[in-house]
Length: 490
Image (cartoon, rainbow, N blue to C red):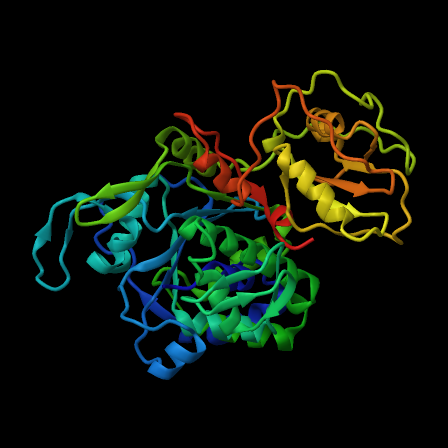
């Protein structure tokens, strides 16, 4: 299996401050290049943003067999395919990024191309999207993504096993969190519940694992998105981007470990760095192409997945138009009430909440310090269908008696549904909190109240917001996404 490039490269390229300009100039000449846009032919129109196709391959050339088996748990033969693919678009104004995961087993149209071995022309046909790389290299991978999404790819980034490992090690490791133990003997992953710091080899196991549960590749994409969000958050929070010496080591490791298209010059990297130096997990949106079928059997290809065409079109249109993928249009925030004051206009027990719980993101905090209270509240809300994080944590001094709902006033419709489930809780406005609401559980917590049938629904599965919509029944699931802050560790 391949590794996940977006974390390492996005941190270095998207979040580099001016302190890294000299570093970029110094290593620019050593970056491996690939002609990713050869024989491009007809291409989508330029949408004004800067869009990368980011791929991780499972190439193993030059890596000792003992290292592959004993350290990386990546034995076997290479599939010569793109094991991980994602689209990373940087907004025109530089203040936001959108990350779209592409399921590796997507059954799509692969354009006509020349076979690299026989030099014969191969007509267009259907196949798994990850096979395009082996059939025609980076140029065919780019053309396949462009023709199936309608998005113009401006740049191409590729990394292998050792590039990912060395980059994470240069960052000093990355913290990940999980509400339950994760174990995958195939990938060598054995992770306890809670928060753990992973080195490069451990991080590779985390993003490659496909046998943790029945979610297979979809669950793996969830962990990849969480990893990138956490990487962005950590890089900004630890001062890496403002420490020239440390940033130099990270940039040197990243840019010596990747292959990029011939058009991506050091000047381009510097321009991106200047535009995006303030990018963080909070203003990075994550989504996955919505699916209509997750086990589409095809002779010669085996199990594949089919995109939900209506949902996918809506997603690609939003990306092409540069619109945020998360939340709803912003409305002016109401003035913040005094600390502890109840939110005006939100009754303690609304009679007709209108937003389904599956569309409401909730982080639970144990404010009373009672053993197991956070997990109990998280589980109760999840059984009602709320999109809880599954990772409750502690809050304050552990002496809270009253349960509180903290929410951004822009999501006042959503808070009515949550308040209906917790009628004894005190709603408190926190302008700027974002789409994820916080429930601070106090010692008065006695349980949740069933919701009206018009808003209730089945509890979400273990998939992230970007996947829940893809797996839900119905002819046209709504495209859903999450910010990096919502999916990173609390």
